Length: 122
Image 1 (tube, rainbow, N blue to C red):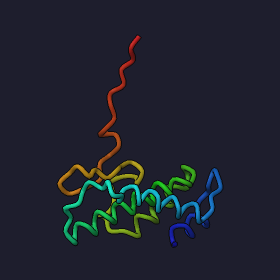
Image 2 (image 1 turned 60 degrees about the vertical axis):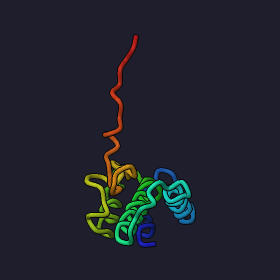
Image 3 (image 1 turned 30 degrees about the vertical axis):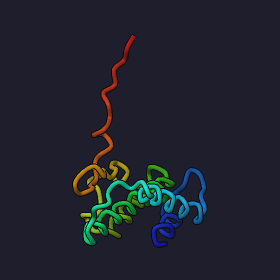
């Protein structure tokens, strides 16, 4: 896989991983998103491909890309972004968004949109 080879040559991992661990993580993230509980079943052929690509990008982000340190992760995100069409990617950093399946057409939503306001109670 090109992304794993690139990460091995250009990125630094704070905790060493093995290729099979990264790919197993990718498969597990993807399987979880596309499990039997997958809630978005009314896809047509074109939107099905788009949503599956987004799920794959999400899986890459949280398996391969997240294994790199903060300084070199940017290089890996740029490399990843060049592998896909702009419509398949979230705006900003790959790790700043998740796929919202509750929308009529599943799309990227920023994590900060679901943050609750912190209130300190004494």
